[in-house]
Structure formats: structure tokens, C-alpha cells
Length: 638
Image (cartoon, rainbow, N blue to C red; front, side, top):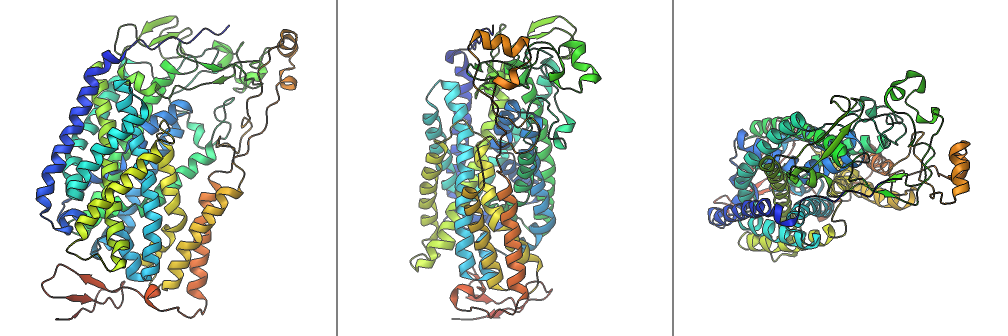
């Protein structure tokens, strides 16, 4: 009895002007990047850390744009649309907390160290072994981060032009690489100012219009038997808060923790802190950017509830898996007053005819949010509110088309967020690869460092583009993978090198390596089914659909659906490995530091002194105590 899904009323030709606008915007970013090629003037300091003279207001813009990337914007919307508000909001919340933590714990002390890259800090305190290990870990992390943003940008380009999604990723990769590699961090900074102004204003203005002029949650219906809400407050603390729909509460909390701590190892965040005019500017920039970007990102999440209302399971566009049954999700009953009856305790099993014998599993539309933002014809977005539970007068049936200009502006915001973070990732990887790894070959010096850095950015762009093509519709997935890597291995030794006076090189190195190894092992050892559900009464799979008419009647009329619809309890411990790995890393660091273990010494485990390659004379700065107020400087004149 479920009707066929209504077709999307817009055609590719209707979206052409928005697609052209996006291409023009990308072209402007490319022109700005090429312009900064000449501003760099062959100086690696300009390319890698933008001359170390950025003021607070520019840092707020460029750090905020790095924080509010494609995952925190489009990925956020996709996750909240498919699940619930907190599944999407966990991304911008975790990223915002990470910038605030950077400002509180790392921005000033790391800026004071006069570093070029984050692995330089590991070399300064732990030796070249930790420098290489941290370089490899962060390069893996940022390859996934870049892939996630290429997915977001490529998805929009392919949708607007009706092209294959892989072509969209390829176009995005080429444009972003071209302008990022031209001017390095300087080009990223210049474009961030333009992208941030357009992107953030688009998010704010369009969101205000959407929330005021369009439905912001789905009404009570057969598919939402207890109705929907914009935000379920209990979703952050109650595993059964979405009864009878499962809640990935454990994974969501792990996501916040991973992003908050893992991003403290973000190469792009650190590069901007090093480029600040001083430590105070770096600290202020991080904290202000975290508050601003986090607020915009979480505000953006509310739009996913509008998409659920217009393209969710109760909408005319909904599709369902035919061969799927559920004993907990209700089709018949539990409407209107019944849904609000306290005696039901929100559980639809209390009504006489519970369960879905077939077509129980909803198939979310991977392009639903883009359709919501671009559908502007009068026949777009039909919405019915039969009993007033959707925020309108009972019996309301109407169309709610999107404002075409604001929808296009919003899309530019997502593209800007995607391009900014992707460009920052490309520059960061090229810098680390050339400076911290290739230099070890002895064939790279200050004179040819910049050409090698630019060349290496192409390699990582291609690799990330290929990874993006493996999951072209999963906009938030790669972000979590990216910072899971560095949270497991790098965060503990990073805190130690800044705040543990006299930390041993061996402790930092073993802490880093052990965390990475444990994370890899647990990835394959822990039970995972890919559905990210572990706790809660409704963490159940869908059973096979009931096709036999006699069995159908038995199940529904006599309440035997639970007997004929076998639903397995889901067990996906994804997230536990993310918490255990840094805990093991911490234990190893403390044990090695406190036990009377003899230092290994040698080139790989001896702290590397700071060298100022840009001084007129060769200056070797030996830091006797990195945590003391005074530092001893030895000048060696050739």
C-alpha cells in the first residue's frame, strides 16, 4: 500500500545557473591562488607559514574555514537527515571544541617554538624517529581529510551538472590542487578571506530563511508514528531516546571526543598557529574561530530536520526496502492523541496493531539535502500536517519551494568550506613530506625545498582523489577516520612534549608507535557490522519481509510479528578502539618515563636542536629546558 516515490521536479537545465555560479567561484579561487604564486617570491617561509605575520582577525577567518569543512557542513546535514540532529551536530561540535583546546593548550607555546611543521616539534623533543613516525601518521590522517572534502565539493559539482560523481571529484581535485600548490599557505589564507565571507554569510542568511519559511520537522504520520522533532534533547543521554528508532549514542560521543582531541594534531591548525604574528594572536584566533565556526556549524544542522520533513520517510519522495520487516516500528495506529498519550511511554508496541511486516527499512536519498536547497519550482516540497504536530494548522497541505538565490548562496558556502580545508590539507601534506621526510635523503636543501613541496602536493591530491572515489556519497565518514588516526597515536606525546618537563625521547616515540599499532589491531579484532549501533533496546537489524498473505495476517491480526520477523541484536563496537588506543599510548608514555630505562641515544632518539635557516649566519639554537623562561643560544659562525 506504499505509493511510489514522487520524482524530483527539477531537471539539470533548471540547475545550470547555480552550477555556473559554483564554477565561477572556483575559478576566482584559482585566480587568487595563481596571484599568490608571485607573492611567495620563492621564499619557503612565505609558502609554508605565510611569513609568520598573520593578525588575529585573519587567523579567525582562516582557522574557522579550516574547521567548518565539507564534513562539518554537508556531511553534518547528511548524517542528521539520515539519523537525527545529534548524529550531524557531533561533527561541528567536536571540531569547534578542538580549536578551543588548541587555543587553550597549544597555540601560544607552539608558536613560541618557531616551528615550520608539527613533526618539527616531535623532532625537537623526541628525535628524528618520532619526527618520521609523526610525519607518517599525520600524512595518512590528512589524506583522508582531503578525500572527505573532495567528496563534498565533487558531490555538489556532479549534482548541479548531472554528471558522474567521479568526474565531479576529479574536477574539484584539479582546481583545488592548482591554486593551493601555487601559493601555499599564503594562497589558502587569501582565498579563505573571500571564501569565508561568502560561505559563512550564506549559511547564516539561508538558514534563517529556511527555518522561518519551511517546515522544520516532520509531522506525525505512518512513518513517524510518534512524530518528529527538530532536536531530541534526550538523544545525547538516552540510548532509547528515539524510541522506536535506534540511537548511535556511543558512536556520537566518541565522534565528539575523537574530533576534539584528534584535531589538536591537525597539520593545518598548527600551520596557522605558526603563521601568527605572536603566540597571543594564535591563541585568540583559535578560540574565537572555534566559537564562531562551531556556532555556524551547529546552526546549520537544524536544516537537516527540514530535509527530513520534505525528503524523509513520511514524505512523498520516500523509498523503502521491500524485503524488510520490523516488530518495533509501527505503520498502523499511534497517530495524533495516541502519540502523546503518556501511558504509551512513546512505545508504539503498546497499540493493538504494531510492527511493519514488509517495507520497514527506509532508504535515505543521498542527494536529499542538495535537492532541498535547489528545488525552487512552485510544485517543490509538498508537506502535509494532518493534526498540527508539524508546526502548522491541522489539515495543512502545501508546497514549500526553496528560494533559488539563497539556495545557491548556501551551496557556495559548502563549496567554500570544502575548498578551503582541502587546500589547507594539500599544502600541509606537501610541507611535511618535503621538509620532514625528503630532507632526510640529503638531496633536499633550502634552495630546492619549495619545488619539491609543490611537486609532492600533486601526489597526495591524486591519492586522496582516488580514496574519495571509493565512497563518493559519504561526506562525513572520512573526517572521523582522519582524526581517529592521530588521536590514537599522537595526542598523548603532543601534550607531553609541551607540558611534561624533561620528557624522555623514548617515552614519546614508544607512546606514538604503540597507540598506532593498537588502533590498527583493534580495527580488525573488535566486532563490527557497519551499522555503528551497540547499546539500546532498538539496536536491531531488519528482518526479511513477509510475503505470504497467510503469514502476513498471522503476524498483524494476532500480534505474532515478533515471532515471524527475526531481528538480530546489532553489535558494532566502532569507537571503543578509538578510546582504548590513546589510553594505551598514555600508559606506555608514563611507564617508560618513570621506569629507570636507559636512553637509546643515537641520531634517531636524540632531540634535534632548532636551526634558523633564514639567518644571515648559521645559528644553532640549543634549548636546554624547553619549559624554562630562559633559553641558551649558541651561535656558530662558519
